[in-house]
Amino acid sequence: GAVVSQHPSWVICKSGTSVKIECRSLDFQATTMFWYRQFPKQSLMLMATSNEGSKATYEQGVEKDKFLINHASLTLSTLTVTSAHPEDSSFYICGKEGDKFSTDTQYFGPGTRLTVL
Amino acid sequence: GENVEQHPSTLSVQEGDSAVIKCTYSDSASNYFPWYKQELGKRPQLIIDIRSNVGEKKDQRIAVTLNKTAKHFSLHITETQPEDSAVYFCAASTPGTYKYIFGTGTRLKVLA
Image 1 (cartoon, helix red, strand yellow):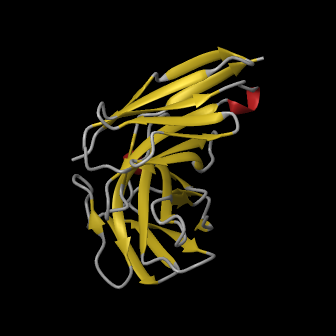
Image 2 (cartoon, chains in turn red, green; image 1 turned 180 degrees about the vertical axis):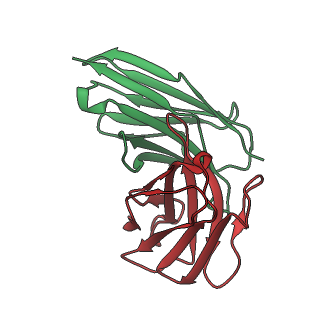
């Protein structure tokens, strides 16, 4: 398996401000982590793949200048929502691949619920 | 790119009955198919998975079947219990990318 934490678990911010969400791998190092967004009653949509020591790979339609990803260490990836607007309100979930016995499997953090007023 | 369809979107069953959720995928290169259970406000939890070299896998009351030719896979839950009520997501992954494309989800309600 794998153990992933996220912080904060929920955040409320004013429109126009920036919010940083942290995703930590607690058990072993992760060169790759994934960021998802989930709107109410919808599925998880992959936003970007976070790569340690290099630029993130964004999915089509995701603004890289709005959703800044930094993967500066093997245990921490951060997602910064810049100039947040109400339409950015969502549940943000990070994931990482499993250990050497289950590299295909992704394990998810507990999620961060962002509400932009 | 990969596209994953999931049906039904909602499913209600009586306690003790079986539930079946089906997914189809488009990319024949996909080789890993996990199923996740997500309770309200919580993270998705892996419940079972299957790789393309296997046709069926079972873990107690949960089983998954894969038909590579037809490009579909199904989740089977037997002897359902109220605590099985949740949203279930299927996903497909292609070799080397570790990226998941998720299905749209199935809201399962088990009626006591």
